[in-house]
Length: 493
Image 1 (cartoon, one colour):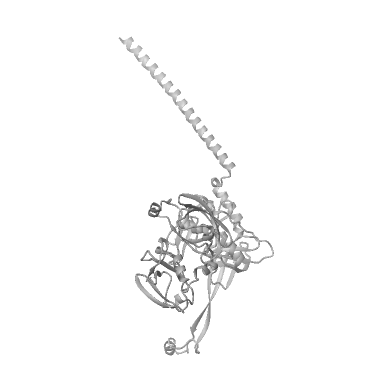
Image 2 (cartoon, helix red, strand yellow):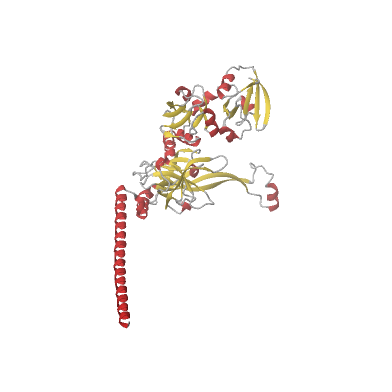
């Protein structure tokens, strides 16, 4: 019995040793496998890193990339100081406090006791040189009303600048500085192909501190921003690269060292939210400013509106693009064969989903340029070529009427713009200075619903009827001003 127990104990000991040995071998194998796994994973990681390096992807090395970009771009970025002299009349007084207080409110400013004060109103911003000749691009609001403009280069040179041209609608201006040698400059890139998440740097002169570089990414594209009641800017690039007061007019630069935007606006109550004008939209503006000193607005003779789900269902058209609601007689649109009811889906092969995209692509073309429209007409896809005309010639087409007004058919777009309360008739969009319409109080936003008790449904109908009137004729207008309908009896001069 005792020997059996001893023998059993021996067997148990051997089993434990065998088990421990087996466990140790298994543990070593697992360690080797784990080591091998990490080796393979690291090798794969290095392989893809090499692929990315060969592909030239700079995002992997953000720190050195940004330093290289800053070194390359900064010499072409300038600080802009502007002075606008404001004349103000100030009462000097007579030396007696009582009389000074009394006469301050009653004396005419042309009488003795007043003097002229010229107050310098100073502003600052940034700009970027866009060619070696010394042309630089900035925001129009940076130099608005400026009597003197001083540009400071990164190397400390101070140069006087003159305004070549400015455009308030786009908030862009081109300045010119003179120098003996060629200026450093940054080329204009292509903002149409930027992607959300791409690295960018913003360079400028925040708070007058001097040229400063901040880095970030493209946060969004196609942003719309209302700066006040009258100005809404569309198609902004949004970035989280820090933009501060004084950065206005400075460049937003991609990893290739190209300008893709002009830093313009911030949301003061937000952080990391800045906006830049896309350079692809700015190129045509810059071209016109260099050539003419102003921007020549183009005219095609089209009235258009968004394709809503209800309109798409009713007309049996795709829910995309813009719907042509009216075509003006004698316009480029009529000559090119565009018709009411056509749906424009692309311009120059660039697809259109909404009205803002349509307007953006139209505004990129200058006077005399040809635009290729892709349209859908009765289920068929067609191509139409239109030549952009200058807007001045458009005024002649529109204003050949005895009232001296420009009208367009009431549609969803102008209903929203003018807060119209009716959906029938033609809306007045402009009134010629000194015209009959101005004298009788017709204003933009007024709706003409009837002429001599006959209803109006299109602008073409309005112009045709206007052409039938002669001097001395009487005209009965059915007009809507705001929410008030009225009838005007007019004797034509």
